View (cartoon, protein in one colour):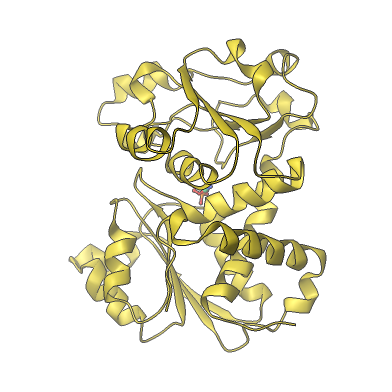
Length: 306
Ligand code: CP
């Protein structure tokens, strides 16, 4: 039995195979409409979500399966003090696979240690979000036709942004990748990612504060929201929340084929006027998230399909 807790739980070959399957599903979704007939997905969401929870549920329903779960800790026995370990022991009796989002870093890993069914990390605190990364990789591959030889700008809250941490880990395994890390001093990428991923593998990167200085170099610009819910101090959030706002004026200096990604939700960091720019891909990510989660659940459930 396999879990997906960290993007590195899948090898590069497995990720490429999974993205190929997601592309095939996108081409002919009806061919997969019964591949999970009789299977049940449990979504255990201790933190708010729109895209991740609903795309997991849509993915299982699209494959003929069923879904059950909760969308807040308050509506589960966590509110009575139940541990993640006991919850997953119970859920293992009801479902075939589960996706868990939790504000505590490491909670999905802990769940996997007590689970009888595959556990998928649907986001743990400011740590990792591996299924968003699969979505991002599918979108980058569709836009650029490659996952290597890319300069990727990551902009915004790089400290708490779990999608950023997972994407750096995953892309670091491809050839000739260079990162431009654009953030205020206080929201830089954590040292454990810099030391254990970038420096450990000699991946080129630079840390800058000004998006205008670097936008012309980028093949991908990955914007992120400043994560209000992770700040201890509201004053700091208010001071930093509008550090970056991508506008059409700034986009004029970008490459004609640069792709703009954002895991969403968006607050202020991309002006609405940018949505009409053909280089934007954040709503493509939302759609791709369904296909990639279908492919992931087929893979973890070992569902065969011709
Ligand atoms: N990208 C993402 O995780 O969005 P949600 O918080 O809406 O699930």
